[in-house]
Length: 283
Ligand code: NAD
Image (cartoon, rainbow, N blue to C red; front, side):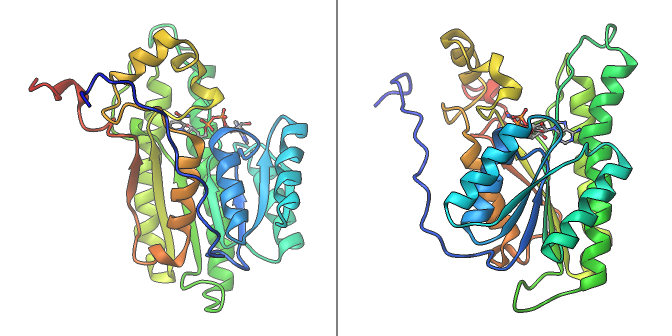
């Protein structure tokens, strides 16, 4: 095979269930689409009860809940804008009332509002920072309050709680035309690591997942035409786009006790996008 041969976009079939998260209560923000939906499905498949958070798209959120229930899992949908303090607090209160507690938070909700820097409006800047960074802070704070209140329940997990921040390769790769988004994800990186350092003594683990290019609505223009897909492949040494399940599978592992000694990392899931592909031929 030579490197120009066409390669299939193969993703492993779902692994057998190990019930890795049995009895755990998980909240996934932005879980009615793309990566968040896959994460919610994988967490439920491993035995967690799941809150499917969403801000718009009631039907899509209820479809995720129904899919989880059809497979024998437990899920509820809760509408809340993660950038609004009162809505986040109400969401956690409802989750604790319905499920009893919170063991896993996946801070996934995010968006882009792209523009050249000299045309970017303050509203575009603020919207992205408010959802992608402040939203993660607001949800992490509520989760940690509950983790500290409850402490470790050893039959459930070695840890008092786990937070997974959805970051991006753009926590380290600068991104022209997307400075609000790159700034938000750079912020997510140091927020995640700083929280991890602060709450580790309470047996709370906080890690980031950093996707490369994953086939979801957020980046449709980067994969929907053959030309766009070919251009994208120049940035991906592994020569395939990522699928939401590539992320869902990794989040389950990071949230599980199999990853109990992992705290404060950025886990890049990017087919090698962060390997400086421009230097693949010697630079
Ligand atoms: P998506 O657009 O399919 O999903 C984003 C989700 O966030 C949607 O459910 C949306 O409704 C929700 N959301 C947006 N604003 C919200 C708010 N204020 N409150 C609650 N929910 C809100 O895109 P995706 O690709 O699945 O993105 C999920 C996460 O992954 C984002 O944080 C994104 O930055 C990150 N990410 C995606 C890629 C990629 O290539 N797709 C790469 C790196 C990082």
